[in-house]
Length: 94
Image: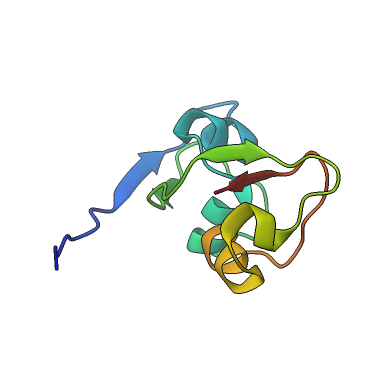
């Protein structure tokens, strides 16, 4: 068994950046950053936020797809994406 440690990535928000901008730059869904940092409001310039490791490929959900189809099971989908919601156009990790 291979043991590896996750190295936390910290990021200082720049002026004019929104959560969606930071998420796009790191290639992860914005809700994962919000969940990791317990954000209830939009980020602000100067804030230091933790960026969770990207574990999978970013994918945009299409019609007719399910959590099981995308990740193997609903539980795995929810674990990887930090949400129980699934809708067309949503960015998720596979």
